[in-house]
Amino acid sequence: MSDRGFALITKGMLSTGMRRASGAVSELGLIEQIRQQFARKRSRALELGIGDDCAILRPRSGWDVVVTTDLLLEGRHFRRDLHAPESAGHRCLARGLSDIAAMGADPIAAFLSLGLPRKSMKSAAERRWLARFLDGIRWLADGSGVMLAGGDTGEVLGDNLVADIVLVGQAPRGAALRRSGASAGDAIYVTGALGGAAAELEAMLAGKGRRLKQEVASHSPGDPRSHSQSPFQSHPQSYPEPRLQVGAALRRRPGVTACLDLSDGLSTDLWHLCQASGVGAEIWKAELPVHMLAAGLSSRFGEDRALTAALHGGEDYELLFTAKPETRLPKRIAGIAVTRIGVTLPRSKGGCSMTLVSADGGRAVLRPDGWEHFREHRRSP
Ligand code: ADP
Ligand code: MG
Image (cartoon, rainbow, N blue to C red; front, side, top):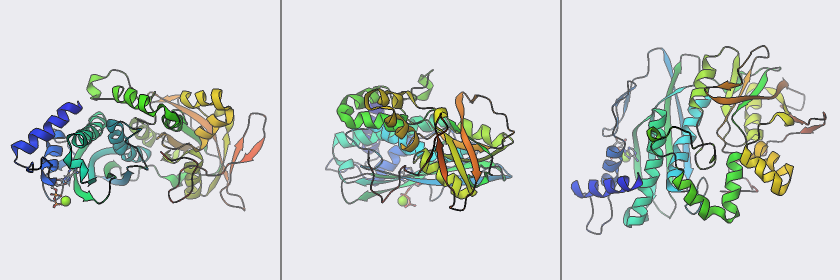
């Protein structure tokens, strides 16, 4: 695992003479190490990968290409004192793959741009951290059938790592799922369970960080081929699982009208869907599939805490989608639970309003209260 990655960095640098007299590693040395670490047989859609000025992609003829880019900022999206390096790497790629899943597309290639503080290249401990971060990316890439096809590497001034991941995917022409396809009366569904990522983060912040980080490192998904069972469910914050197979299945299903992934929290992402489709929505509180970790919060802090995590806690990377009312869906798609949680409504005079309906029929306004950058929040990683 990580030791091997680290050994590769060291060996790669030494053998290519790219290690500086100071012991620090150079930009070219690091790129060579990444190229070796991610060297794989070419996929059909990737004609040329790392090493030239551009990668060459060859999507299936008649298919659309979908592209997404996501920033991972140290201190904002992960913290070294809370997240194991493999978890930070996993989350970096998972963010992009989840967007590809939300479009119902198949991933083709990833591009990783790294802005690294000078210290990353200097001490052995820092280089080891980076090697383990790359392991986290590689394991998820291998498990998802996506190739790392290029990127860029540079030095940032300051102490925090910046990673930008670009994902390229493909979907049959016109078949990619959009946020804008819902009409009033459509059924609203989510995959998996909600609030787990926020609940795990809460436990990390509550001072269990150190122990959890060790546990998480040892529960790292690791090389996916060595696992028969998914380790994702118990660590939705550290190792969120992009719903690629569900997304691809939804794109093939007639009657699915709109889809997006839950990165900012159900309330905020539902609001995005409502805005894009020009509809309102009603969510049935009793139907929300609350993650077991979030449910655990309610025994300590009251029921509201679990509901808040499920409604507003971000980073679950589940899919939120709509389907025409007559569409019949199975309880599980690609092995993942699919739960109906509400219905879209005609847009009201006031705009795209969202309502939370309790089991006794009580109605309350549901405000988008998930994550938004450049805004004051109750939480940060
Ligand atoms: P250029 O000067 O043309 O940008 P670089 O020296 O930056 O070339 O990159 C050389 C090759 O290494 C390119 O194929 C590029 O895509 C790849 N590369 C650079 N940085 C990374 C990275 N962080 N991850 C993956 N591939 C990378
Ligand atoms: Mg470059």
